[in-house]
Length: 303
Ligand code: SIN
Image (cartoon, rainbow, N blue to C red; front, side):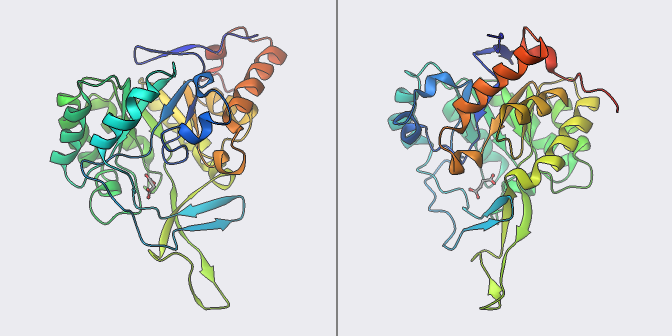
């Protein structure tokens, strides 16, 4: 077996495979199928200060090699998470990443303060949700606002801060650099690409919100390109995601410069996707004669 372990911003992970926020709930349903302690980490569904019901249906559409979602950050609120889910998650021997959202800078800071005294290992600041009218991606498009919100939240965070970036920009590397300059400990990329789905028979939109975020294998080449470009620019760790379904997909992100990966949409098509990817990554390392998976990071060669 290869050594898959890593240190992510001072937190020990047994492997680089993390369940992506919004695709894994708080882990309970998956733990009925397999021990979620096998995973490197879990990024929980995006949390807000107050509970949110999310957007009205229809809010999911299947698309070629992917899906569109317009969930709108439905969640039970941070207090419910801290009281009901976190104590259980902390018994699972897995890194717990709290994905935080807000409608204004004060709310993002309030989330970081609320989670500071808890056992959460890392924070992932979501400034890239395309499905809400207030907050979300509004903070994640311009490098100046990425810088400002990262600086403000970092100042009150006790856990290492990961900033989750949107691909819906001209040059994602500018935002990666802005996050780094403001003190982010890591970046995760990419969140979903904005799209629409059309019902030609009813001649109307399929999603009630009109637009949604595209994820799944369809976005993988875009995500790989963005991770690769950002890895040339920033020194902080990158967590890569976008359509990962196999161990070799995970390896591709690591070759492009990702220290760890997040697996999202694949959890919907195969609930065993994460443990399968861990096994396949191990097999890939063995086949490549790589003793430590971290040796792969950023070693992609030109053609
Ligand atoms: C959602 O809840 O709308 C998805 C979250 C995200 O895209 O960040």
